[in-house]
Image (cartoon, rainbow, N blue to C red; front, top):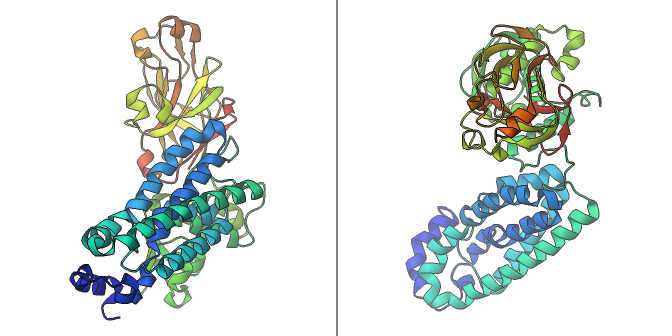
Length: 452
C-alpha cells in the first residue's frame, strides 16, 4: 500500500466516517494494524497476573513497578519494560503474549473490525473511536467487549504459567534480589553474557559492562589492533591499526551497543550513558596480560562491590523518612536500619569529608570514582556530636571494613530522632547501571548492597 497503512487510513478517514459499511470491507488492509489491541487489553491482564503472583511483602513495590509501565503501554503503546521482562525472565511468557495478541487481532478482524490500532489508547481515540463512532459504534463496542474478555484470558493464562513454572517475575524473586522491569539493553546484555566464551566461572560475578567491554574489544580486532581509545558522552571512540579486522556492526549491536560508526581507522561504538564505566573495563582488558584477559573481563577491580556500612535491615533510598534523601536529592543508594552502633568503610576508599562538629556524616570516594555520603540518622546534626565518635580524618585512606564512626543509638532515640544510616551515592547519575540489593538483613562490611 502506497505510503503505508497509517498514511492511507488518515488520508481516507473522511470517507470512512460517513460510510455504514463494515470497517473490514472499507479497509481490509487495516487487519495488519490491530496488534495494538494486545497492548491495550492484553498487557494489563498480564501485569495483574504478575502482581497477584508476587509475594505479599513485595506487592507494594511490584505495583509501583507495574502500574506506570502498564499505563504507558495502554496509552502510548510503548511496551518495552513489560515485553523485555518476559524475554529476560521467561521467554515462554513472551511467546504466550505473542500468540494471544495475534489471536485477539484475528478475532477482532473476524468480527468486522479494521483501522489504525497499532499504538495505544491515544491512537484508538484520536484516529478511530472519536471520528468514526457515529457510523461504526457497534464494531467498537464489540472490540471493547472482546478485548476485556482477552484481558481475563491473559490474566488466568499468565497466572497459571507463572505459578506452574515458578518463574521469578517481579515480586517473586529471592529476598536479596532487587525487583525490576528489564529493558532491551538488559536483554541484549544477558544474551551477550551467555555467549561470552562459555561464560564466566560460577564463582565469579558477571557484570554486563565487563561483558560488553570484552565483546567490543574482540569486535574491534583484539588488543593488538587498538591504537587509541577515548570516549564522549555516549560513544566509545577507538582508533585501530587495521580496519579490516573490525567485525560487522551486528556484532556490536548483538553485544548491547546501539550502533557502530566507521570512518577509516576511526570507529565509534555507540554505547549510551554507561560509556565511562565500559571504557574503564575496556582499558583494563588492554593492559591485562593475555593469559588474564578472561579473568579481567569478570570480577575486575572496576566492578566495585559496596558492602553495608553497618549491621541491620537494608531498605531502598525511597523509603528513608526524610524528603531530601527519599527524593534522591543527594543521589541514589540504600539505607540501613541499624541493630548496632558502628559504621565501617563499605569498600577501599579515600575519606573526602567529615563533619567534625556533629560527627554524624562521612564522605568517601571509592576507587572507581563513586562518591558516597554516609549519613547517620535523620536530623541528628542537631545533637551537635553528642553520642558520636569519629575515627577517621579527611584525606585518610581506608580499607573495606575499617571503622569510621561509632554512635550511641540510645542517645539518638532518646532525643526523638531516627538512627537510619544512609548510603547515598552523590554522583549516582554517572553510574546508570548501579544495582541495589534491598529488603534483607546485612552484616557490616560483609553483605554487598550496591554494585557498579
